[in-house]
Image (tube, rainbow, N blue to C red):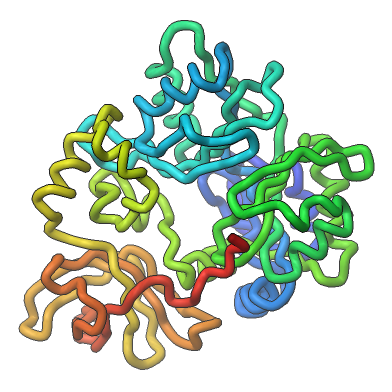
Length: 376
């Protein structure tokens, strides 16, 4: 166990230890990277059944102080997504951009089903960036609006093809919950906010629960034979096969949404309005094109290409860098993502990966490596 004395712990830390998890420091928290079965088995279990993840290190908050229209209008000055059109319970993926148009973080924004003191908009941000994000958003909210941290909430993710049946057994209405929508349910006295979302490429749910109820819910879900606990190792291999970005690797302050292939998250009318922070670069990248693009990479052979690996052309010229890489259990071989010069970004392009001074042949491929199975 590699826990750090300065790390924080989620309400489920003792549960992970009791299950034999290997705990490592991650984003300021002691988190389970794998359980005794191992990353490969956990990855495959999630693909075939239902994997349970502790993602309580993520940041949950609400924006309060006004009605939805007021809050949505304020957020649209901060993020490029279309927030105003969200109906109650609907959520949307977006990014925080710097004034220069680089990605400060990616996040999920939901139109709350019930406002009350929680606020009409619910936001989830990445663990490693949450203090930064809370400050960034708070500083840009107009007078009267306020960001409320919800450190009293834990977050669980149940992912995989059997997740629907498991959740429907606890709350039948969840079987019909559409992708990127949320519902408020009560299970065995526990009030839950459940969204049909996740970051594995599989169908599944993310469940916001009070810290005091987190252990009860965790044990309840694991009592189902279709559910097993899954660590951060398999979460990473699943999201990589799904072509999903990891902040700090595939996206960061140096990358724009256009380079990262995230323009699907910015509605056409928002591109035209260009009234959000960082819009100038996005507009320029769309108009003039970009020098590099995020792509999928399939190395030949069995050796994986890790983050930071240099990508070269057949002529030996450096054309890019790997940002995420590893073994893809479902693919049955190494997979990677990275940025390459736009001229080399077309699927089928042959490249080389410089591993320990040797040129390893690879091919640019379309993302995702494994088709996503979100229930749309």
